[in-house]
Image (cartoon, rainbow, N blue to C red; front, side, top):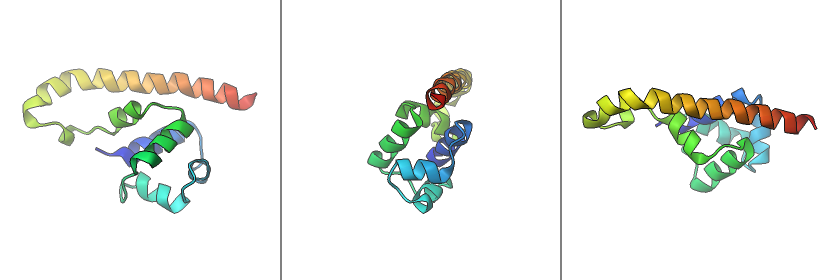
Amino acid sequence: MNIGFAIRSIRTKLSIAQYELAEKCNISQTALSQIETGRKRPSPKTLDSICKVLDVPTAIIYIIAMERADVPESKRAVYNLVFPSIKGLALQMLDTEHHELTAEMDR
């Protein structure tokens, strides 16, 4: 599971600078950088804060963060069948939220 990759992907998709997200989440930019590069896992409180600022449900972070290696071998056939659609829907939700967030910021 690569939570840092998911956070970085969403942050860049929303055109939010790393320092801005860190500041809004009350963490240092160094801490956020370590989370995004996978050197550090966010605490549940930090992850909740990041999700709140990015305006995405925690579940979306986990969906985008999921990797094939996270799935037991016995479940991979189902994963290969279902996961691309689930991830696609999660990314579509981000696109919708991005448009809403951008419109809100422009007001």
